[in-house]
Image (cartoon, rainbow, N blue to C red):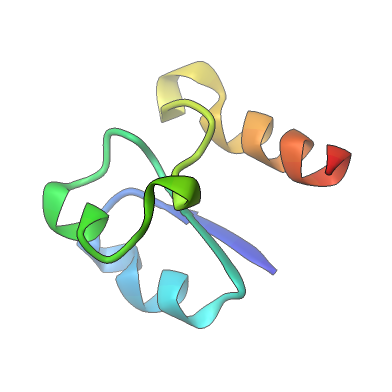
Length: 59
């Protein structure tokens, strides 16, 4: 299961799932919990969630 978030209110959900992804424009504190490889392909203004899902399906 994958989840996507951009704020601290998403932290618990992101820590629970097997494949957490955060937006590149996420809050800095949220970024401190995740590695660069757990960022979406692009931000939410440029189809970041959709592009990341498509990349996951392609891999």
